[in-house]
Length: 624
Image (tube, rainbow, N blue to C red; front, side):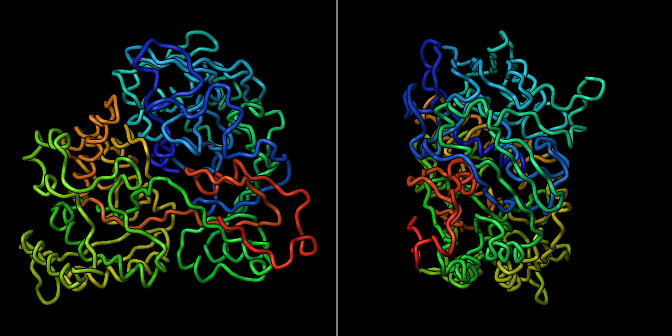
């Protein structure tokens, strides 16, 4: 998993509900207001605390890689197995799937923030244990932080944690993070970092190896699962630790119910889909509207053994987009980038390819309180005004709306507007080819790691051809794809950015100027804007929602009107097929469930599993 995705997965993290007063220890930490659950809560509301333990969950890998070559998920090179981080590493705090911006104590039994907001102190639970039986100590927390900030992990960690001044071990069970400035996000950001043992990666001489040489060493974490049998290139099994130290904690009650989690690896989508239909695994999430509408069928669906479930959620919609790499000379002019977006006909694609299953992405904060609409407020203008000369005038007007073709505006209208923008930028069509003053043709390359991507790209390619622009499709294997992304060696690609309810320092990795020149950062479009940097600083340093929201909106406006991204599409449901004869689940679907990890965490195995003889006849799929 790339680092920027890890940052956004820690999206429940934020500031403190106790930071404004005297420092005192609390069972949880809320960004705005108080935690929903009191200190004596018994379990999360969406779990079954009586869920039976046992059985096996058979999954398909959710990664695009066809195999794995390391067990270390934190180093830059190589690929770790799917789900390893989530299953093997605990953190000081953990989030709830029906609440945002709150972390509850896991490794830490309590957390306190200093009255000046310049430090957060965590006290570890005395019963916390690593897989090797040793206690989780403050020294391990510091070691984990120092390692993640070292030279062998993604530079995104340095960006995310740039405002952390240091870590102090106060005693064996007490660790204090110091901050360079008060920051409502940081106490829980550090609380969400993975903690691993100092013994992980020790050499034969008992001394620690450089972290980039910790490759196939079995991770020593404190999570509910360990690595079990492995068939390289085929599958990996995680085995539940029956002595898991936190199994009876309220934050873990009703979770980690499967004795084994088997993750199978398939090299192409067709093989994966056919294996599901044949019953080779129990659960699979779908991202293809075509597959979901036309190819998810067969005998096991007719009998009710396999069930199609669409689970509604309230997660941020994210901002999956075509990314335009402004490091490339042809894409440095904002008018050119806007013209490319005008040639993208989402409504046609929705009708012809997507079966109406998706909504258009409209900004970087969709389906959150930071989503931006209409004209800038006075508070937003106050943030934007010092940068007026550096920003396009459109930033100070209505929020950007992606062009449409199903209303008063047609594709022809959009292409005419695009042609005018290209002419303003110095491009003219000569013999059907768009050229600049020096005669250079507008030829761009779209890079993908899947040949199937050309299907969704083809209509955009045709529309661009009408403008004299050639867009070539380049399919590369995933290893090369990752390498080229790390080095920003592409013109255009697709990035499925995950959204967050609590935007913070991770946006410096996504759009900050310093990250633009830093290999393996998340700043794929190469944004280098002092105004963007200023909005991110304002967003991160906000002490209240009232201060944060204008900064979010201002940042959203700058990115949208900068046309660094051509917004694609999102869905408000998790589409999953699951084996109803082998699996059962809680009645409550948490609003912030994260797809298949919700099943891994909270579902359980039927015992015994149903069969064709014991299953209800003409089983009716559950309405989810």
